Image (cartoon, rainbow, N blue to C red; front, side, top):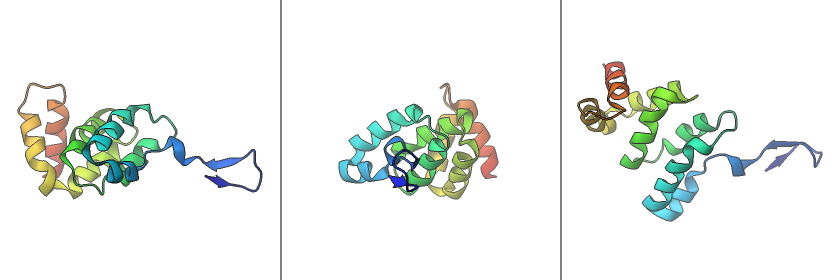
Length: 116
């Protein structure tokens, strides 16, 4: 937590932002828990921070969360950029989702089109 010099003025409370160190220490189960909490992060910039911080973790567990963010998050642009930067890793997942009958099929098609 950073303080501005006054105890009543908090500049950034890290406890309300996603922290990938939890996933590093706890493995896939902790990562899954963090992904399930993603929607609960409501502070301004929290979803953008989620993509930035967790985007360094190469895990298929993150792909559905990032895909959902491309459709309905304040971090749409960041999530779409992540897929473009990691197309080699994410393409098979996106192609499978795009041909499925799932709710995220349309989002996967849009993201795939952006990769071209």
